Image (cartoon, rainbow over all chains, first blue to last red; front, side):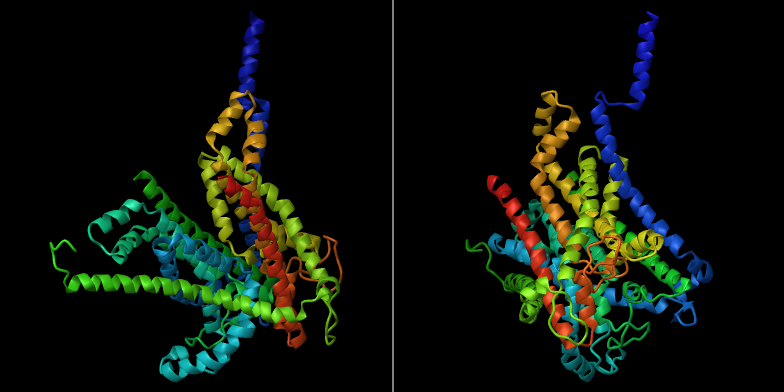
Length: 322
Length: 288
């Protein structure tokens, strides 16, 4: 009698630690769980490593790092304002140009294109996203920049030179080249997510509009309004991509920490500073400042991406409950 | 309108014309989006093909000033780097994807799913900085290992999400059939679920590998680059992408030409990988 009780207790004891009936199942679940946990820990570890690496710079400059406009490795003064300015201006301008195009292409793919044309076109757009960034940069140096130098910049300064944005010597390398190359690079990302979001809007929305006598364009406007938050999410993903884009931008932007209203002037982005100066950073403080820059980039992109994913996910959920 | 109930008026034609114009504009936008693609391919092929010969694949880079030579070390280096990356990214990605689809309907699952998506948006150069502080600093020198690990981290999100999506496509009845036969869940998952989803998973793996092959930023200060033959994972190693970057910036016209050829070879390598996945996945869609 007492033996069976103790056996039962032993069983309960085992159950607490091995909840599944099968020992193999338990091991398998825990094993896959460990890998999932490793992804979780990896993101935390990345933040921690960069915080540790940039400690002396954080201690010395604090928040001044973000608002000081002098980046002078020789005198060991590191202020990232012009760099943050260059990053945000180049990304925002690229988004402003890319967004109408992306929405246009996405509408064409999701609403207008016949199936036999939609597949190859979608494939080509995805191909554009798959080209390595360094090849964009190579093309930028030898094709885009000479074209900007000889045609675009002289034309702009001739016609619009009264504006402060289009003044200065036409070097080719500079903010304008970076904006154009970023535009090409974010276009496929915004397009493909917007297309998916548009497709997730139920057919009934379009049919209802068309049944009331709306034209194709009017029904498209209704679909676009339904997809608003998803399109915003897609735009933010594009923004996240643009601020982190390294190689292509580094190769064409001119690489000088400078706040200037002119698009012809060289500029600098956070990613391109790191790419350019990391191997040259001789002093501990210099390296630490560069790692701090990476940390700022990390925090911004995490924030932007998290918000963007929540927006895109909310779109998914919206139609599932309908 | 034809039944005579109402006569088409000015507003009717205006909205028809507006609709036509706007829809045509979307078509023009689609065409415009293709232009950069055509231009990039045109220049890479036309400029790259002039140097494309057998030497490029089997010879070593020549010193400055001498023309000719190849990038054998960089081609092998790129393959070694994505090999190391795959050794990390593939198991982590597949196992995490399996967890997310089979056991991940809880809070922790949602957090991990969210973090993989966030991880996919982190700039590759940031991953390079982390690999530097984590591996290069303790080892005290640049190495292929550090570069490979950075690439491995970058592969994880792609492989995880594809694995999860592909496993979810496996019909529930297959799992139930396995369990009804008394097969334990872990064995059902491994030998039935994963086995029927492997083509899709392979697609994700090849996508991850081909993206890693095109990465430059995380290699700049991890694998660094090497002008000599090296296959040791403890030493700096050459890669096609870093060669393209260095040669594109160099003042020598001969090197600029070689950068185009390296770009062409890189595109060929990536196309080869995606061709491979098209061949693998084709039969899947046929049976559907």
